[in-house]
Length: 491
Image 1 (tube, one colour):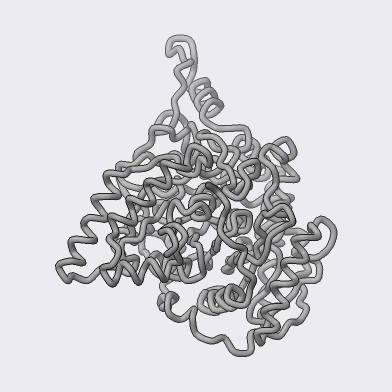
Image 2: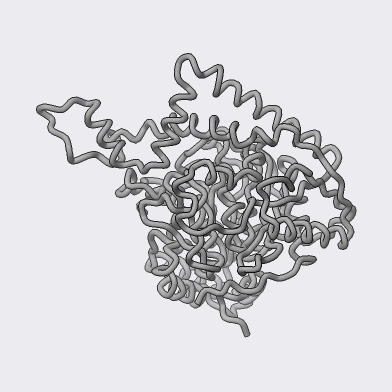
């Protein structure tokens, strides 16, 4: 019998539902795993063992009494530290919010509680979700459990590492330009960005409001489908939340997908793509073809502008969203302030200078410049127009295919520190994922192979807006037809 941290979502759910496994037992095992590994990986920023065990006991008591239990059945879940949880520190990986304890919970946290997910703690992330390596966190870098000298990706690196290492079977991350799919690829787990508006952003600390979306991490496609079903749905507190029925993803993703049409973007296989990544991705697509899918080329003519477009729109929105952190209303306030001799601007400048890290400052400055008088039309407005073209390219492609398949990132996990002094190289890590955020469509990363050094590689699938069922069916098809990458080797 495999250890609990090695078991599939199906196996854990079946044992919980049958009463053969108590939620407390599983939660205790996860907490022990965190105690064992977090000093090596730094995946969790905080853990509340007492609250988690109390929540698990509540599920076990109600199950024993014959009461109905939510769809998560007492499965432990970790949440990225940019999602508010009432009374629990929510730092966004930043010194700016080091002592912030929100008085309310995010919609997704409410949904986890309603569906009997056991929240064990908050997961590490790049500061304010700005990064691709989880190295910009004020809590220190997270390490990849496949090789601790390497990055787990970002900005949801803590979530990906925690699931890969068996600390929790499920986790929630956020994806603004690839921040779920890229770390999922680097850590050999399943990570999904839903359609923009499918999951409420209420209680998610904003980075770029028109791009951010919360989504699931899991060891397998079934876990991702189950967690998405638990958190998806309309929320009146988020004006961008779409009032659309939520499918039974946890069941429908298993249904046979006949005649799947896969689109391949030839430009994805050019300069900059690592040979081993290309080989693994092409092999993954070939296995789908062997399982009955048809493959054809599609064009995304404006994809080459995605990175430039994203790094105008996202920093511009970040500049606006992060203006609230001034050391007055809330957030870090400098102690280096003399009320007799210094002015209000000195307080603002020092508080923000101390509270924000270098990458956040860089993006605030980029965004402020792009929005400034005389440059708005030339940069931000033009970027919005190109964004529309990118969306139109996807719409046209999806008139001929059901999903688009390709790489998640140009390389497998890079070494920690390798790209920190080269922001452009770091930004290019998201070259294949950014388009889905700009277009608002769903995307998923499914493991498809290993490099010769034993690092995971992910296959990215993208689908039309609100086609999560098709996307999950295709991902399940890729999972069952694919070669297993084996267990994560972390001790």
